[in-house]
Length: 96
Image 1 (tube, rainbow, N blue to C red):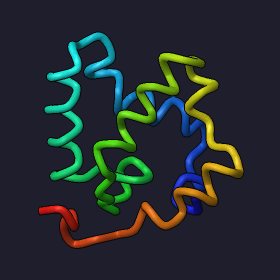
Image 2: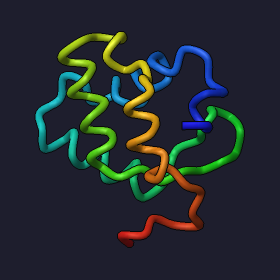
Image 3: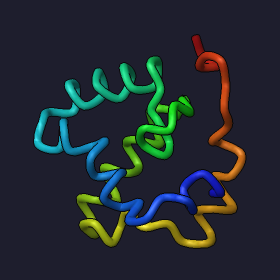
């Protein structure tokens, strides 16, 4: 994804997003991810560009971290192509 290509160490950024609920029960994780989905996140951090990601994106990051650590959070070409359509700048989340 072009948005993430400009961020060095994207895995550290993704970890920062999920670290808040890393060891919380699933219910709290879902609540936190729903909150992030509604309010959006800055990509890259501090840029002022707000992007609204679906809850499943955050859950995927958490799953990859649990399986492979920080290496699991790095982008690969297949993920870039598959998710290129899922990140777009919107005035609000489409599921609101």
